[in-house]
Amino acid sequence: MSIKGKTVFISGASSGIGEACARAFAANGARLILAARNLEQLQRLAEELQQRYTTETLLRALDVRDRAAVERTVSDLPEAWRRIDILINNAGLALGLEKLYQGAIEDWETMIDTNVKGLLYLTRLIVPLMVENHLDGHVINIGSIAGVQAYPNGAVYCATKAAVKFISDGLRMDVADQPIRVTNIQPGLVETNFSVVRFKGDEERAGGVYQGIKPLKGEDIADIALYCAMAPAHVQICEVTVTATHQASATVVHREKSRG
Image 1 (spheres, rainbow, N blue to C red):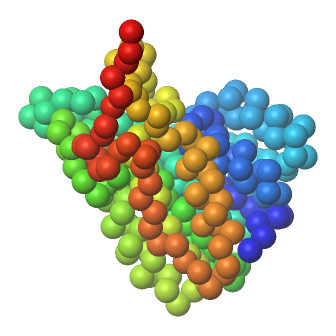
Image 2 (image 1 turned 30 degrees about the vertical axis):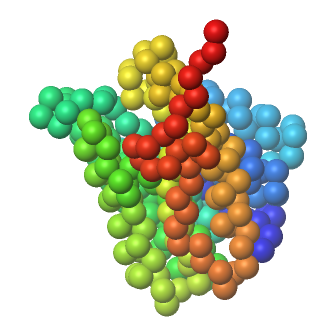
Image 3 (image 1 turned 120 degrees about the vertical axis):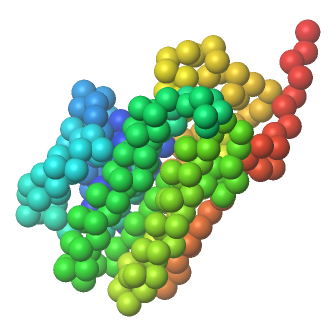
């Protein structure tokens, strides 16, 4: 199934998995609506994609936690951009790694507002456009293996990603009478700026997360998203859980000892 000429909305598109998805979908001829808080990074990405692939892009500075801003972003889309074929709900983050009874409530609120409510806001506004336009639409949510298996000191983050799983499952039921597919991609360890954000800029601690293992890259997840989007129209890939070869579960990771 070709995605050439299709319109793809990507949240959190300025870095990590979102940026990798932008590159992968641009390379296959899609038009992109790129949304993120950092407009400057989006502009640099859009210039690169235009030069490499002549990609048509529409950029929006957006914090998905802000419901009014999400509503404005979608309602103010130019007419030529309102036929959104694919929504990639990628914006998300983890903050902190403490026991539940020691966690910062502000961090919980940020994770819930971004990972759950932000995803819901965009889905609620964009899926009706797919229905109205009779599109073979596709919602691709970037979840996490943490939404399947909790791990110590990550209860709230894990809960937000479990919510993504069940929102995906429920939406899939709600659009079963429509030509709209819903996919939840659940990665394990992916080396992006994820851990730097979680540890609030502590790059040394963030680097330790990936020590002794070759983790997934943003490009690996983008390849999966692209594969799901390009499957034949009658094929719905509901859920993909993907880890690095030496990661068996959310908590079981084989790490090679450094030599020398």
